[in-house]
Length: 183
Image (cartoon, rainbow, N blue to C red; front, side, top):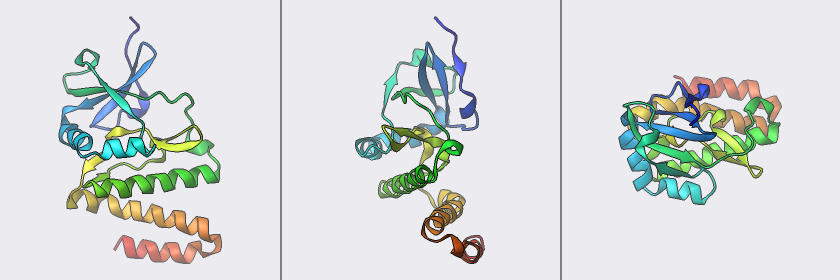
């Protein structure tokens, strides 16, 4: 059996991490994320996003794949054959990724969940369309979470709409948006 290796890009999230074993990618869901993961799966948000091709699917696998005592579940996400990064994307891909993130965030609110992490690095292109690859990006909605994430999320959404609509308008509108959102 080949050695297990952690994926360096997922070390920051206390909810879990990605690792490779025998040329297969897995994600460990840690106990600290249990209530959010269980709600995601029972609320039908996961099923809705997968059916709408906005979130990659996964299968739960046995506990023998666990990498630590913190493991709650181990999932095997759908394989994405080609990984690309936002700094490699053209403007239309960046725009599609941002709009997909906004669609996901809106659907999550319908199920009383929200995106805690809307990094462009959590989006990949599968068959030419953007799809979220981070199942652990969702949390149960609460006012505390909303106060923490909504200002930055709103500012990024506003920035996208400004850039795609009219570049000369950026400085004045950005200044107004920043004053309004961050007061």
